[in-house]
Image (tube, rainbow, N blue to C red; front, top):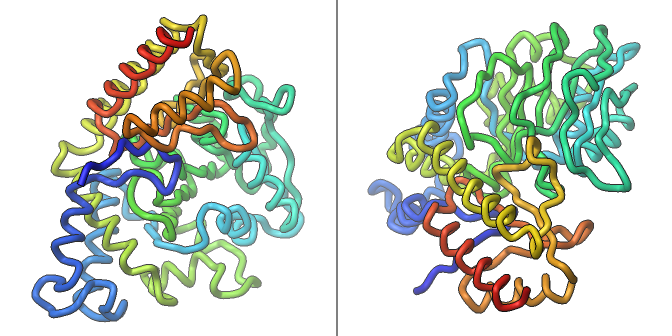
Length: 362
C-alpha cells in the first residue's frame, strides 16, 4: 500500500512505527489473547500502558513532581469551560490574550462562566497575522489567571517566546504545538493540549496542572469537571479512551527512540525553514500573510493569486499523493500542517511540487 503525505491539521499524521506497533499488537496485546481495546481500564495490563504514557510525557518534558499529568476527554473545547469552572472564583476576573480563532473561542466560552477581559488582541480586519509584543499586554495584576493559545492552527500564528505574566498564573492551550520542542513547564500553571496534532489520535486531552492550583480550585462544580477528582483517580475516574492512551504511549516511544525533543525540534525547524524559504523566494506567486516573527512552525498558511489556482494546487497535490492542504473554511487559502510525524523528506517533496506548480502556473 502506498501511503500519502498527510498534511491534515488534525486528526493528523502519526509516526509509522507507532502505527505498526499497534498493528502488530492489535489482536493479541503482549500475549494476553485480546486487544488492548478489550482490556479493562482498571486491569494491570492497561494500567501499565497508562502509567508508561504519563511517565514518558513527564520524562520528555522534565515535568516537576508538583504538577499533575492528566488524560481527559472533550478536547480543547471542553477545557475552554473547565479552566474557568475550576480556576475562576466569584468576584475575580481572568485575562485572555487573543491571537486567533481558538483563543477567541476560549474567551467566549469563559464569559459564560465568569468575568473575563481581553488583555490583548491582534485581530485586524477579521484576521490575525501576528502575536502581541510584551509591551502590548494590558494585564491585570490581580487576575485569577492569564490564558493564551501558543499556536493558532487556522491563522498560522505562533508564539516563539511565551508572554510574561509575573505572579499571575499562566494558562496555555498548546493543542497544536504540544511537544514540538522542549520548554520550561514551570513557566505555566496549567497547560492543555488535544492529542490529535502531535502525540496521538483524537479523543484525548493532556492536561499538565500545578498541584497547588488543583487544591485551591473550586469544589462547587460537578465532579466530572473537577481537575482534583481526575487527579485523585489517576485519570481513571471514568472509563478513558484506552486505545488512544495506548497510541500516545507508542508515539512517546517513537519520540524517545528518535533522539528526544531536541531532535524533534531540529526536524520541525528545518521543515518550516524549507517551506518559508520557498514562499519568500516565490513571493510574487505565493503570499504568506503572517508577519515573519509570528510565523507558525506547525501550520503554514499562504494564498495564491486566485482561488481557482488554490483549488488547482489542492487537486494537483492530491494526484501527486499529498492531501490535507486546503485552508480552514473560515479563511480559505492553503495550509500546510507539518506536525511531528511529517518527515523532512516529505516536506522536501512538497516544496519541490510547489516550485514546479509556480513555474507552470505563474
